[in-house]
Length: 177
Figure 1: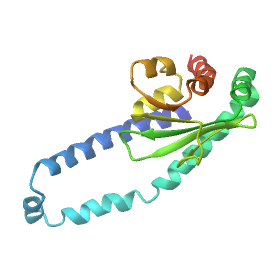
Figure 2: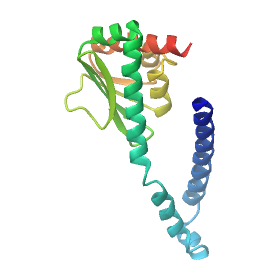
Figure 3: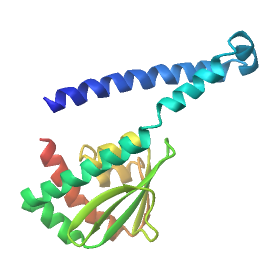
Figure 4: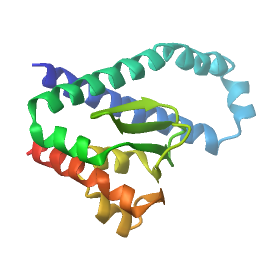
């Protein structure tokens, strides 16, 4: 039941993002001064969009909290995940999205895995890629080695450290079925 609700929201959100992108493209192509002259209320409407997003930071934080709680629950339930995290030791990965101005991190330490917004001060690795690629990496849909070799991701740091995350990816791939 929850999955259907989330699927519905994702569909509506994706449609909305496409509509917003189309409007913004139109605004980029035309002279904004001419548009404002014809439609002076446009600027207020653009601010209304921003105002409507005031809950976005809390929603992102809540989403990250749920992901972290899910990973903890999976680690308790699946020995394979617990072992992958334990074997990785301490690993901190800063992730920079090349298509969206957001940075976050994935951290494994003391047998736990977590993600968070922002950056670690002393990461082991830095991964840079577009958001869809990062999502595919984190969910196991895209193999990390394949992504690196095909230059879909850029990695700064030790290759030996980078391979520590591969067992986690394998687990996520199996979990997806």
